[in-house]
Length: 113
Length: 111
Image (tube, rainbow over all chains, first blue to last red; front, side):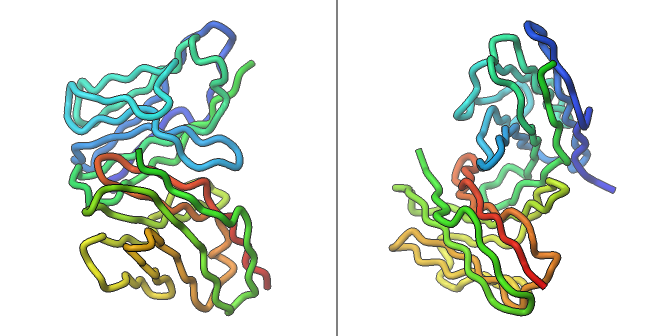
């Protein structure tokens, strides 16, 4: 079955450490997105990519980095510069046309040790 | 930048009753798309319904329907015959070049 796979489901980061969240899709979607969700808040856009080897910053890109070397993959790195990384992270993909809804992965919960 | 406002942080409804969740947005765009997503306790995001701004007819999906008022920039979701499985967070979203979400409404369906 086609879908979006996020891994790991839970991730722990030590102070000063970079961590990478994986997002893979087999839906042949052009566009991919990363969101951060904090308790009691909606989803905030971190980065998005509409085509391979290209990506744009969202509203809260500081302290994060991404790459899009393959259509299927859009990993997110949470760097040590992100001072408050504890959150739930959701990856999404879509066909790229504005009218197409986004399909979401099951999320990764990142916590600080 | 576009903003999406959901003014009801929490709502509750009795099983089999009808409930309406509010959403307003701010944009200068004329063509765009609106969505309602459901996030149950499993935290999976599930598309409920979508509306194209150029269509005057309100979208309907089984028990879910919207009231889209373009001039008022309003996009409310009506859930009819509420079921216990409808208990979830509901997010309104606006899409033009990227998707913007509201803060969500936590809906509880009571037996």
